Length: 119
Length: 111
Image (cartoon, rainbow over all chains, first blue to last red; front, side):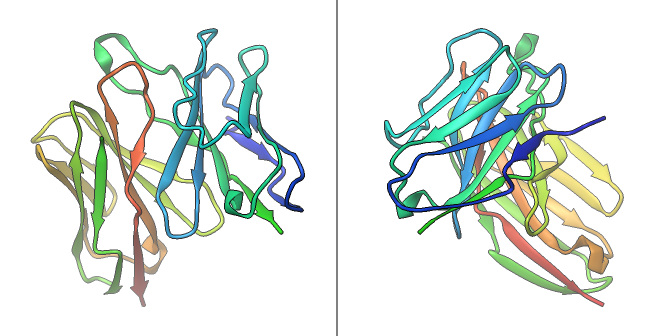
C-alpha cells in the first residue's frame, strides 16, 4: 500500500517568510508525528497527534512553529517568520495508533521528508 | 531526560567482514527500542522493535539484540547494498509515544 507522503520534497525560502509543509499519513493510521533532522544531529521530535486528542506540542522549538491535522488525516506544519536555523529536513511519520493496550509500541513509518533551506 | 548514544559514528567494512553497531540508552522506563535504516535523501526505514532485555530479532544479514543498557545491531557478511546510516531510537513509558533518536552510524561496505 501507499506509504507516508510529504510535499514539497524541497523548499527554498527567504528569511522572514512563512512556509507550510504537508504530510499524508498511511491510510488508517491514527497517530502522526513530526520530526526535524538537522545536519549532524539526530532526529528531533516536534509534535504528536493521536486521533481527536489534543496534540502534544512539547517538542516545538518556538511559537513560530505550529501544526494542525484536519479530519484525522492530513497534517500541515507551519513555520512563521523563518530563520536560517530552521533549515533542516522535516520528517513526518505515522503509526497505527500511538499506544496499544499494555503499552506495546507500534512502529512508526516515515515519509521521505521535506528539505527546507532558508536563505 | 531520555538519551541515546550510538557508536562508532562511522564504520567502513570490507564486503563479508562482519561487525556490530552499538546503541547505548538511558531512559526512565523502556517501552521499546527501534532500529531504522536511512539511505541518503530518504526517510528512515523501519527494521526492528525490541521490547525487553534478552530479546533478539533477525532479518537477512542483520540481527538486533537488547540488554538493559544497550542494543547491538550485528551485521553478518555485509554487502555493499547494506551501506546506509543506521538509526537507533527509544520510546519511553508515558503518554507521549515520541521516539528519541541517536545521531546514527554511517556504514560503508566496500566491494
